[in-house]
Length: 97
Image 1: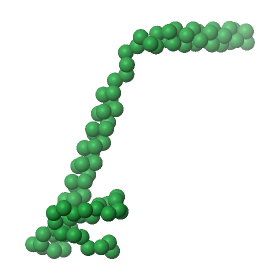
Image 2: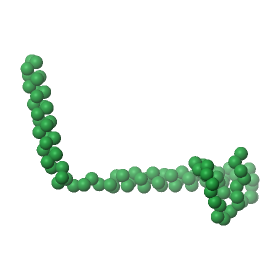
Image 3: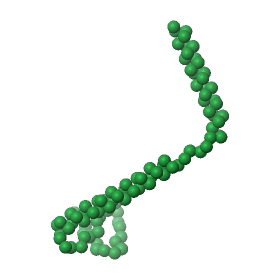
Image 4: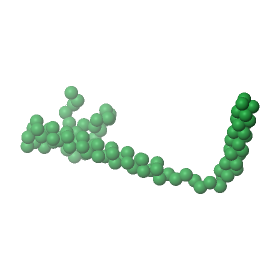
C-alpha cells in the first residue's frame, strides 16, 4: 500500500511539473487580462460615495431646518478633512465646537 501511495505522489509531482512547464511555454501567447472588472468596481465605489455624500448632506439640511425653520442652510463642514478650505460663494461657517 505504501509503494502505491508513493507512486501516486510521484506521478502527481511529475505531472504538476509537466503542467507548469507547458503553461510557462504558452504564457507569452495568452490574451491579456481585461480591466473591465476593476473599472466596474472603481465606478461602483465612486458612485456609492457620491450617493452617500448626497444622503449625508440632505440629512444635515433636514436637521438644520428642524432646528431653524425658514432659514437658509449654511454650508456643511467637510467630515473627513480638517485642513483649510475655501468658500467661494456662501456664508463662512462658525468655528468647530
